[in-house]
Image (cartoon, rainbow, N blue to C red):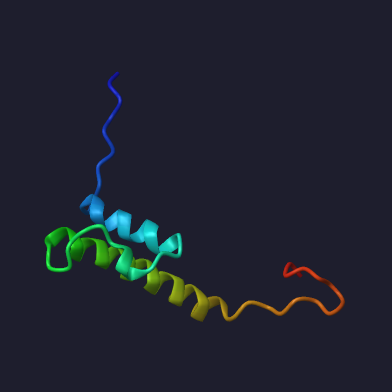
Length: 75
């Protein structure tokens, strides 16, 4: 049986933008021109990932402060 090629829903630039946002890179780090189709898809992925991160914070609330007396952020 042949290995199936992964089918992407959006252009690869979209997934590159999502990955860049999750890596904490700046919006200005996009590899495409500002007024190009790929640049638009990259920016869409970057913003979608940003909205998911914002929604996660709003849904789960802010992170709990560390337990007093511990030097770790893990409670």
